[in-house]
Image 1 (tube, helix red, strand yellow):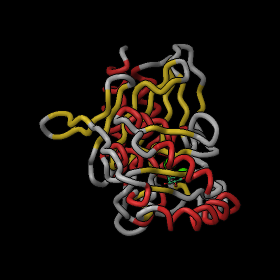
Image 2 (spheres, helix red, strand yellow):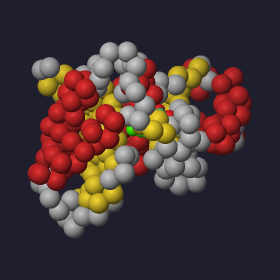
Image 3 (tube, rainbow, N blue to C red):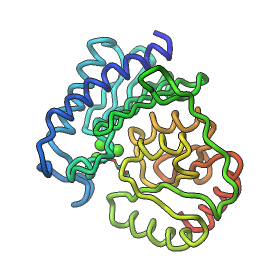
Image 4 (cartoon, rainbow, N blue to C red):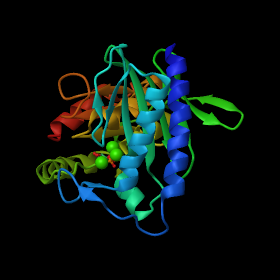
Length: 264
Ligand code: IPD
Ligand code: CA
Ligand code: CA
Ligand code: CA
């Protein structure tokens, strides 16, 4: 399969998963099944069932691939392709019924993300990207290619962010935020890293910063952003759990310095 065909598989499976989550969600609040890294890190039975559905569909199509999912799947493969899946990115929003939660599916080849698919489950908005082929939003009449717009100055930058579930990380993020907020236009905490990164690719944000992201939070949305021309970085190397910062090249160097100086 080509990378574009891997994306088509991700989209087919992701659409089915999103339809499942929509049909399974009761009215009102969703019951929390258990908590993970802290009391605020919740998971529902629907997160787990959604991951099972995605794993079954991917393995039915490509039995030898690897698969890593947030809700516990970790299968080593033999084909060189592995899948990195967040069945519901934005579980807290999902629990409360705030319409910003997504299915995120990425395919890696030799460890590099080559295809990424994100669907906002409640809104139905879908994004896709293939390494070297760009990123787009799926529209009823085809694909609308994404090119992130340039940013005038950092003082005009609207920055998406998120807060980790681990209290110690969160306290550190809050302290860095106190230094950061006076220097930018404002921040937004939407509650789904995958949606944040796709929105950044569309120009709904100018930049992004977050600590504590896992591979399944970052893989698909990160490719959508980078293929739209956004630069992503970590503290002293590639973006990862320690830090993800992302911005348009027009302000990236200056923005990354600001993030470091604020103590993220
Ligand atoms: C979370 C969301 C949130 C981010 C957290 C993630 P989950 O994922 O992406 O925006 O701030 O760091 O863990 O748990 O809802 O899949
Ligand atoms: Ca997530
Ligand atoms: Ca999740
Ligand atoms: Ca989670």
